[in-house]
Image (cartoon, rainbow, N blue to C red; front, top):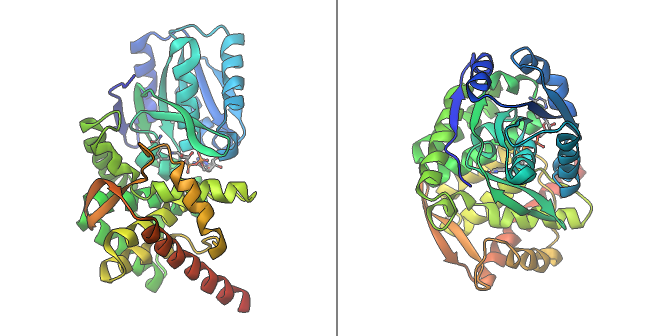
Amino acid sequence: MHQEAEILIGKDVLSRIPEYIISKSFSSVFVLVDENTFEYCYSELKEFLPKHHLIEIESGEGNKTISTCERIWRKLTEENADREALLINLGGGVLSDLGGFAAGCYKRGIKYINVPTTLLAMVDASVGSKTGVDFMNFKNQIGLFYGPQAIFIYTDFLRTLTEKELYAGFSEVIKHYLIADAEAFYEISDLFLQICRQNISIKQIDWEELVKKNIYIKSQIVDKDKFEKADRKALNFGHTIAHAMESYYLNKGYRISHGMAVGIGILCESRISIGPGTRFAHIQLCIFFLFKDLPELPQKDIPEILRLIKQDKKNTGGHVQFTLLEDIGTYSINNVVEESVITENLKYYSEYTEIYDADTTSN
Ligand SMILES: NC(=O)c1ccc[n+]([C@@H]2O[C@H](COP(=O)([O-])OP(=O)(O)OC[C@H]3O[C@@H](n4cnc5c(N)ncnc54)[C@H](O)[C@@H]3O)[C@@H](O)[C@H]2O)c1
C-alpha cells in the first residue's frame, strides 16, 4: 500500500503532533525507540504525546530483523493494539524501515508516522514508503511498500548525532544531487573543500534547507513511480555495489554503515558511468572527505563482490541492471554493464584502499 504522507518540517513540528493525533482518533499510541533515540530524543517528543506505550529495541543494522519485528508484534499484542493503533518511529533509517514493516504486517496494517532523527533518515529513509528487514545477510530482502501517514522532521535532533553518522547521511545527499541537481552537487563539493581548507564546521549548514531540497528531489521521483517500475530506479544509483559491499563485509564478520556502503557504491558506479576525469575527481573528493576510513577490498575478493552483485534483488532475467549517471545531474536506468567493466572499477577501489592502508600504517 502506498500512502501519500504529509511531511512537516520546522522548529515547532513536535508541538504539532498532539493536534495530529487527536484529529485521527487513534485507539492507542506506541513509540518505537532504540537506546540512543531513547536517550537523546525521546524526552523532547514525550512532552507532546498523549498516554502511550514505549517499545525499546537495540540500535544498529544488526537488529533490522524479523526477530526484532516479533518483539514489536508481541508488545502490540500484549497491549491489545487494535487496527486503529498508531506506531511512531523515533529514530534513524533502521527504525523507520523496521517499524514501518512491523506496522504494515500487524493485523494487516496499522498506521504509523516517522519522526526521523538521523540525517540519512531525514533526507531519505523516512520518505517514500519502502520498509523492510534484512535476511540471511541480504539487505532489505523481506519488505513492503507501506507508507507512513505523516513525517515530522525536527532537525535539532541532529545535534546529538556523532560526526561519523552525520557524514554517513551525506552519501544519500550526494546521490540525490548527482542524479538530479548538478548545481547543488558542485555547491556541496565546494563546501566540503572549504571545510578541509579552512577548518570550518559542517554544523553551520542550514539543515532545514538541505533536508527540504533532498525531500523535494526524492518525492519528485517517487511520485512518478511509486513501485519502482521505472523512474524510481534512479534512486538506486550507487546501491547495486553498495548492497553487495554491505553483504561482503558482513560475511567477513565486519559491518560497515549503510551510508559508507553507498559512498563506495557512488564512487565505483560514478567511475563506471563517466570514467575517471575532472567530473569524477569532484565526486571522489566528496566521498574521500566524508569517509576517511574506507575499508580495504583485497583484489582476490572481487569475484565475491561480482557474485553478490548478481544476486541483487533489483536484477531481472539474470541481468545485472545499473542506474548510471549520464552526466552530473542526469541519469539513465536499466544499464547492463559488462562484467569486465565492473571488475575494472572495483579494482580501482581495491587499489585505492591498498595504497591508503599502506599510507596510514606507515605513518
Ligand atoms: N526505506 C528507504 O527508502 C531507505 C533509504 C535509505 C536508507 N534506508 C535504510 O536506512 C538504514 C540506515 O539508517 P541510519 O543511517 O539512520 O541508521 P540508524 O537508524 O542505525 O542510526 C544510526 C545510529 O545513530 C543513532 N541515532 C539515531 N538518531 C540519533 C540522534 N539524534 N542522536 C544520537 N544518536 C542517534 C542510532 O541509534 C544508531 O546507532 C539502513 O538500514 C538503510 O537500508 C532506507
